[in-house]
Image (cartoon, rainbow, N blue to C red; front, top):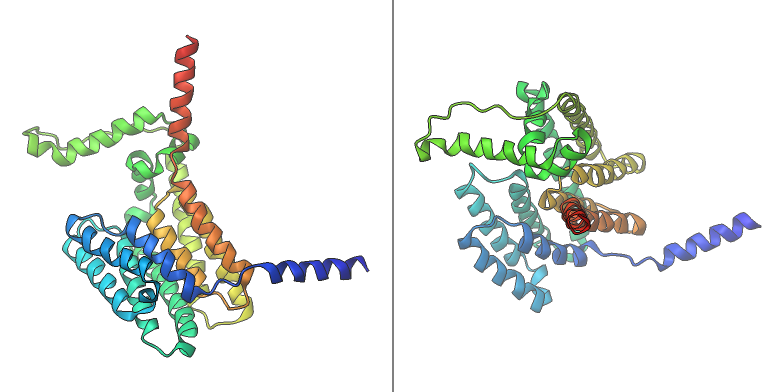
Length: 309
């Protein structure tokens, strides 16, 4: 009897969970993605912001293919003009906008399925190409990429400082050395090499990150490119959510994390209410990861110790 009552309560709880319609929710979240994480160049910001505001004020516009075609064109053109410095997720944002454009050109009864299938393919192909690039790049396979990234990338500063016990000042000095190396010729300084400060923990940590990244991306590529089925759907969603809540805790690249979570939400089955909420929760959690908690805590503790002294 207790088991039957528990099952009844669970069904009632599931029934109270809002059935998030991806075709309604995703355009709104995509506007948020575009406003905060599209390429930050002056000639894109004004027209893109104007387009997004128009969509928020006149909500039916967000289901018009022309709106997403314009967004994809503007983002794509900006990425093309800045290809040498454009992050990977800027390309993904452009693909995502083009995907929404394509979906909304279809009859209403076909849009949900097209959105789900296209999202799975985009995730699978993205991860497959990521694994391919890593597999053919010796500087990635030997851990050099992550070793360098841990020592100089601002986005990894909190993670590198906590796990390797390298001070924030040392990491800042490393970034200044790299800047000196890249800009020294402008200042007339004969700087050809620099030596980055690290310790014995950084290299093995870089190796762990290297092979974990290849493993999880390989699982994602295989799961999302595999023909659809209930069992493989469990693997898809579990691995993508795991990827989102772990990867972006280490490297809070919010734009890429948000795009992947939107794609994950887009491919959910209509009845998967809790799963949709899980992707939405991961979307918000990635934003929380980007908050400078460590820097604020160090500032507060520094002020308190100074006041106590």
